[in-house]
Image (cartoon, rainbow, N blue to C red; front, side, top):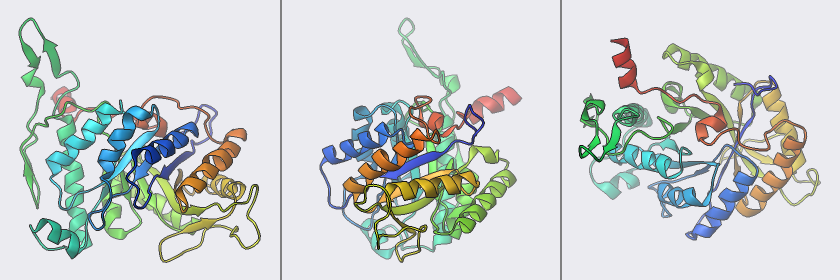
Length: 359
C-alpha cells in the first residue's frame, strides 16, 4: 500500500524481549517508547522451552497503558488448545481496541512435549501443517459471531441474535472444533497474524494465512526473493498479495556512538551469525540501511530486535526513527487506531456474512 504521497509505506516494528524480567513497568516503558516513535507494533516472544512470563498476559497488561501501538504476542499452536488460543487473542483485540496481533509459532522439542505428556515431539513440517489448521479455524471462530450478533435488547431480554452465530464444524488432521466462539467478533475482524517465514516449513502457512511475514536474512537479495515467493504463493492461494506485508527481521546492536558506527563497531550491512542476522552500527547507519532496502523494494519494512533492550530501543526510536521522520520517510503519527490501519490492511468481512450474501 502506498502513502498519500505515492510512496510505498515503510513499516517498522520492534521486539520487547527481555530475559528474566518480570516487572510490568519495564515492558510498559518500552512499549510507550515504541509508540512515541509511531512504530507499527511491538512483539513479545514466548516459548514452552524456557521459563519466563506469558507473552499474551504481559501484552494484555500493556493494552490499557498504551493507546496506538500494535501488540503481538507469540503463542505456540503445538500443545495449546486452538479454541482457547483464538479466544485469548480475540480478547486482547477487544481490550486493546483493535491493536492485537498473534505471532504463530510451533514447539518442536521433546522437552516441551513432556511438559504436557500428551504426545511426542513431531517433525517441523507436521507441526506447521497443524499450525496452518489452527490459523484457519481461528479465523472461522472469529467470524462465528457476525459483527452485529450482539444486540443487548433489554426489552425482550435477548443478548444475542442466535441467527447470527455460526457453528464452524471444523475437522482437521489433529483436532476438530464445533464452535461458535465464546468471544464476539474482534474489532479488527481478524487480529493480525504474523509468521516467521524464514524456514521452508513455515513459508506456506505464512503465504496462506499471515498478514505479516518475517524473513531473517542478512542478504537483501534473499529477502527480496523471499518476498517475491511469498507474494506469488499468496496469490496462488487466492489472496491479494498486496494484503501481505514482508518485513526483514534483524537483531540490532546500535552501540554507543552518537552519529555513525564507531571504529570497530560494525557498519557495512548486517552479517550472518549463529543466532541470526545481526546489524551493528550507529542509528544513522541503520536508517541508511532501512532506506536502501525499502527504496529498492526488497521488503515492506523491518522487525528489529535490540541486542541491549533499553539502550538499543532508545537509540532506535530517538535516533533512527527520528531521522527517517525528519526525511519524510516514516510517519510522525498513527493514521488510524487499529493495527490493521497502521499496516494499511483492510478489515476482512466475515466469511459467513459473505457466504449468505453470495447465496
